[in-house]
Amino acid sequence: MTPNLPELLMGNLIAISTPPPPESAGEFAGGRIGVIGMISFMAAQEAEKGVAVRVAENRAIRALFADAVKEGWAPSLASLDALAKGEDDDLTLSGVDAANATLRRALIPLHAAIEDAPGAEGRAREVRILKLLREGAQSRALSLPGM
Amino acid sequence: MTLADQLGGYLSDLWSEIVVVENLSRIPGGASRETYRFDAVTKTGSRGLILRRDPADSLIDTDRRVEYLAYESFHPLGIPTPEPIKLEVAAAALERPFFLMSRIEGGAAASPFAIDPYAPHAATIGEQFFTLLGRIAAADPQALPISTVCEAPALGACWSRELAHWERELDKDELHPQPIARAAIRWLRRNPPPPAQKISVVHGDYRSGNFMHDGAGRILAVLDWEMAHLGDPLEDLGWAIDPLWSHFETERVSGLLPRAEAIALWEKASGLTVDPAALAWWELFSSFKGLVIWVSAARSYRDGGMSDPVLGFSGWYTARRHDVIIAERLEKLLADRMEKAA
Image (tube, rainbow over the protein chains, first blue to last red):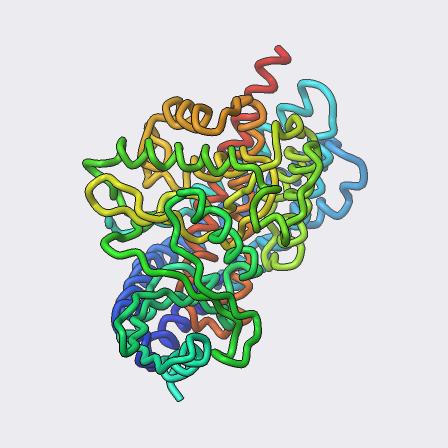
């Protein structure tokens, strides 16, 4: 996802260390500090769970691809076979994010193909993909401090 | 030369008298225009004004002429809005285009992420909020100044024009693949809504947090018309009741009223009827549009050297909120479809 954690923390530093013009020094600067604080609050959550969330999502997508290949969900699934066999070797945030981008890019046309597939089998697969997407989104969600 | 000096010089030329700008202060919130409050002081008195200036980096790219003409359109109709004073499209005076409007005193806008910000006046404010939106929907756009710069789509083309616009924005600004947004686009295209009942002015960002209230139950001003356009009036209703703007509530839309009450107020004020299927389309579209705005914010944050934390916040926290909202909607829509088919 973008922006990523290093960018956000670097951005916080830039925002704090840039002196505001006089007309932005009062209420506006106060609001800006509040936003910086919220980003920092959520950055702690992302530092704690960010890699684990992406690894879990990547694993779920690979498992989906493996079943899609095995069960012949759609034509031209050869490229998914290699992706299904992949692993997250680079466990930095940027590493698992890059792998996630590759997997998501491949998931989009598979999902579209499944939507076009008729019958109960197609719908069951569509349910599975939407569940995967919803669970992935929920696991990435961040909490704000109470306001 | 400071911004206050530049502004004072501009107003002195405009009003043909010496104007000194005092108490110039930027107002937090919003990332599509820089907003400042100030006092324009002449020898005869002082006038409270607002400056809306184009930013260096924006959350959304909008035409300040449209926003200005929206104020020109609705201020005379009694929709509470600031009075527009002057639009300046040339960049010479203040380095970027800007416009001026009157300042409304005695109120504040709630943070869209505050918990129960309108208590104990939520119901009273909600009645005004949805009635005002209905009145905006009821207005004849062809009689309004905004129609000189906004093209009216055909009744049956409102949805496709908006969807195509926001899909293009996603294509332009997407940095990380967005399978949920792409699934939403496909659903929206496969399940178009019926033609609009009428063409209305669509505020484009009518929601909690974009109006000022006096803290005692009265809406003082509807603000932030920068995404105004002509289209299906249900678009605004769908956006206003998006879960992102519910203040984390599930029982009251916009943190103000139960959904059925809000819709009934809108119908009464607009003279229009809400087709549930059509509104469901515009609700999913609104969440998709929101997500694209946050994707664009993330792009602007990175391209702008990560200097604006509001863009970073929008491109991160709110993007993830809308991802969840859309995914849950898509699951429910599929479940409903399968139940019907069974």
